[in-house]
Image (tube, rainbow, N blue to C red; front, side, top):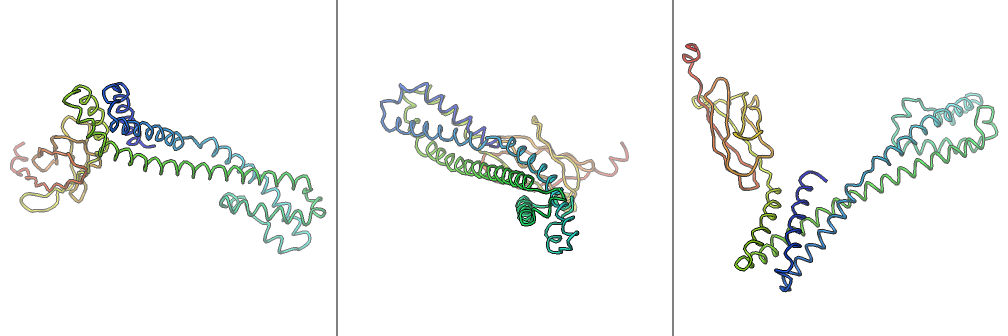
Length: 307
């Protein structure tokens, strides 16, 4: 799971903790208790889906790749023996099917590698007696079949695990949406009704919910800079936010962009060596793109000369 999903899950857990610590306040209210129980059940399912989605597959990838490398080495020797045999009996059909260079062998897709291996094994089985002088016998063919099956099995396991992870991620997103609907559409309103009798609990609950809501906000800020006198785009320079470790550069076409701008009220500073710096207030409270069209005043040439 990505950072945003993990932060969102953390906020759910904090909300659940607030509810668990204050069960006595709402347990007699059938409506609220049912909503809380549903939230707890969905959250437990969400945690299980996260575990499935985050399970490591590196160990299986490593095992598959190790078998594949060994397979490629054995297959090249196997193929070379078939080529030698085909040359000795002038069999162009076997030669065409069996020949493969080391370089091409590494370029084969996994499915093509398996198909090539099986084809080579079938040829070897058909000519097993004649191939003995070239280093291929029944035992070697049997060993090759085992290697090929082992690789197929690891590949199948990996594909199945990847699909399982992908399904878990998809189900996670759908369940997260369901939880959001439950919280925003029902439970928040139910808890709000308790404010007059239990203000501290309601304040605590919504403090945890606010953390959840803030995580959803990703603001995109796009700015365009022009010379106040000429209307021409202003190229290059820097844009930064006061009090935050957040900055970006002005492009050669006179634009700048913040992909994830923080919520709240901030001061945006725009700087270019040939223009007077701008200080622009910016307020972001909605999850939407904000476009800014700014004009900068050029520094007078006389002022630059006197300095």
